[in-house]
Image 1 (cartoon, rainbow, N blue to C red):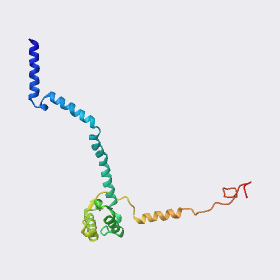
Image 2: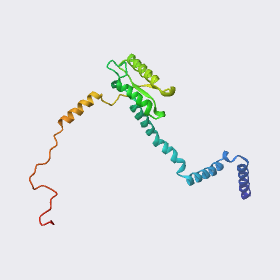
Image 3: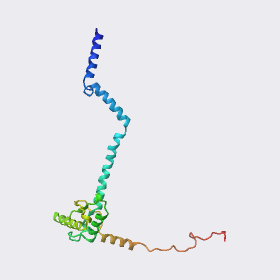
Image 4: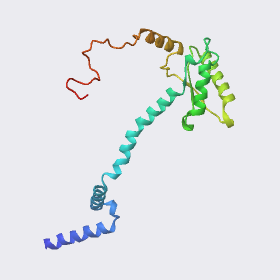
Amino acid sequence: MTSRRIGGVWVFLLAMAWATPLWANPIGEFCAGIVKDFKRRNCWPEPFVYPDRQAVREPLAVMIGNGWQRQNLVTDVHFERGGIELSEAGRRKVLEILNEAPEQHRIVYVYRGATPQETAIRMAAVQLFVGQSAYGGQAVPVVESNRPGDGWPASHVEIVNRKFEAAFPEPKLSGGGGGGAGGGAGAGGAH
């Protein structure tokens, strides 16, 4: 009699397993997990390559953006002594950004002045020059930046170059002593 009861319980459990949705019972979840694991193992590492590639590219995108910000930065050395008007170097720098930077990186960054008023004046001067110089009505953004420039003023570079050239020794030919290396025929050589 007990075997009939056990058999009846098994029939009842199987009937319940087939009657409920497959994902709603533990047996169905277990079978679905096996199928999912089988498929995941057979396509490995493909699903995981793309997030890894993205994780590697994200810092590079930040570095590229910072590099373009530094490249397109108009700093103190690009303004006249008062910090109000663009100098010749500043105008050339802005024209270089407008003409040579790729379109997606064509943004002029202006380093902050000593005061908010000076920053506003600098921004207005650069925006005015960009508006006058843009070709085809092209709107080029002018953005404030807190990244300091790493360049030197041209006058400092010139002083360093002149001092370097002044300290360079005069070129001299080595003195003749006869025993040095030369291009003559050795002893006992062919005539």
